[in-house]
Amino acid sequence: MADVDKRNVNYYLTTLTVESVPLSKQAGFKVFLKLENLQPPGSFKIRGISHFCKKAVNVRGCKRLVCASGGNAGMAAAYAAQQLKTPCTIVLPESTPEFIAHKLPDYGAEVVVQGKVFDHANQYALELAKQPDK
Image (cartoon, rainbow, N blue to C red; front, side):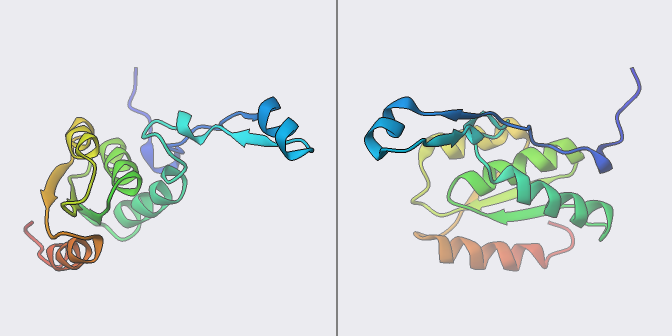
């Protein structure tokens, strides 16, 4: 089977919208849930981040992606990078849940833990992104 051209493919699913009967009863009107938890990396963040990553790689020619995250954004960036066959570094603050840090390498991402809070991780990621050989 030939390789699919990954430049024009969406890396996210069209997810279901379902009525929640318990929430509808409690609210007094119909409440619907969009099941974005069914996205490959587990959240809606893949929608915007995959577009950004594709543009960075395919239009701007980026050879590596760097993202600071405390969770879902990093998962989405790592998944998109994997689909793009592009190296990716996710910079996490120390406060990131352990299961996130352990799952990111499954998508091929390098994980760097830097700083106690997101702002510290983000500052480090910005500096890392400026380094052409990292």
